[in-house]
Amino acid sequence: MPARNLTGDGRAVSPVIGAVLMVAITVILAALIGTFVLGLSDSAEETPQASFSLEPYDDDADNDPDAVVITHESGDRFPAGTVTVRAAGDTFSWGSAVSAGDSFVVADSGGATGISSDGTLSSTDVSGETFRVIYTSSGGDQTTVLATYEVPS
Image 1: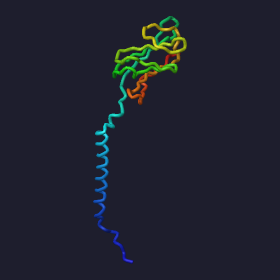
Image 2: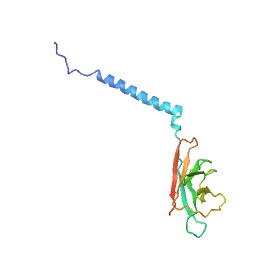
Image 3: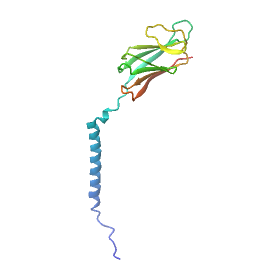
Image 4: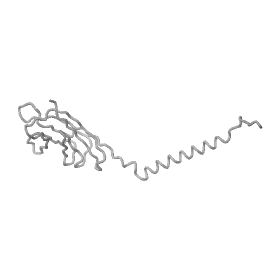
């Protein structure tokens, strides 16, 4: 049996590695270009940035908060119907477009949380309730909690 030469010069290895690298680079570039051409990079909607303040409101002298005043302090403007408030298992839509400086009052009326748009509030206590301001994308496929507030007991 003839002895094989295992100490060859290895010249065939470099072209094979070069070809594999060229194919890999071509595939990666094709994937990147295809993503931008087809617009797949724009399909994920960016989460808006905003700051909300939530404060208890007491319209009588019983020292128990009767409502929560939610104010959009700063940040992005939201289209109508994309911002909701969840409290006590109920969800309420902030019906109009929401811009910095806008306020929203959520009050508890007889055990069911309700919205007071005219400034008249019930005297029912909202102590211990957790209020969440939630953004829902226009397609409805993405939700983000923008602010959370638990009313002190």
